[in-house]
Image (tube, rainbow, N blue to C red; front, side):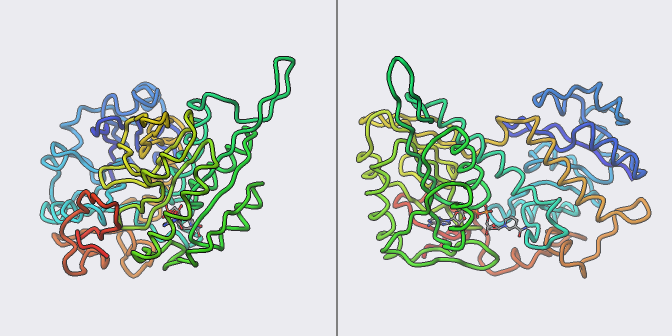
Length: 396
Ligand code: NAD
């Protein structure tokens, strides 16, 4: 079986689906590996290193001969045009946000496997959990970015030239990325407070040396599968109002809140930004073209408010650490691929809970249950009031 690694085409994407170490592992399992020339360049992984690990370096046109194409993000238009029936693609295809892509891949006769749908609570899926590996990187980088942007120190410093008090950092959302941001900010010496609608995260937050912030106006909002549920309009308003008072007392706010398949909730309103002291820094890790956790944040841009708050739209931080992110992603995607290979061929078994969780199209049809629900056609539209709309565009 031939497995190919594509050169990612999305603007700003610097990761690559396999690193040379992973190529060697697939070769050892008897697979042939093709790597598109220059695929690893932006992660400082040269074609030569892939060739040494046993890959064949090929131009893009030759990827058509592969049985399976591995990628990090979604395929470009050009890649889709080159796919042929019977081919399989593996990547983070974001089918809940972009169900139209799943339909196009199905129509092209392509077997599409989306790593971002992996059933994360299955113990055997953990080595394949790319959402977690990339969220860990993003959380680390968010804290480092905040520290580098902040005009003062994170740690308490006592020097002959004076004493600096430690920075007060607030982390909103304590899933994988939030916990890593807490750990990193703590290691840099900041005093950290963190909040989540899932109260079960309190012990994790406290074990990292941070204080858990409890809001009196919003109860627990744990949803299915360890994720948060969408808040009601009243809860959302109460949460924003109460958070504003806390945000005002912090130097740095890092937001990571997500609800799967929904627009990210707004946690930091324009009023909250106005209440912060000049020089404060806000990193919005949820910022994307679907919105973000911070009112007025712009994906991939840094804006400074009139009152001197730096707001960083940081929704794609893993790509800013491309070597580490690619190495981790490569382990995730090769573990998933190898778990689906039998006798040297891709052998999909939909009776397996893990495989049924990730295969979104096969034999010309979209087959994933989450994509077969009615009215899931449209990706979320920009939401001027910062609400939480479904990916089908309807609002709560
Ligand atoms: P996520 O990216 O979906 O969301 C990040 C955080 O935002 C979550 O903690 C969520 O509760 C929080 N959030 C959502 N809406 C909020 C709001 N209005 N206000 C405040 N916070 C809000 O989360 P994730 O990092 O992907 O993790 C989701 C869950 O999956 C966690 O329970 C995590 O422990 C679990 N998980 C389990 C495994 C495993 O069992 N092996 C692996 C990975 C993740």
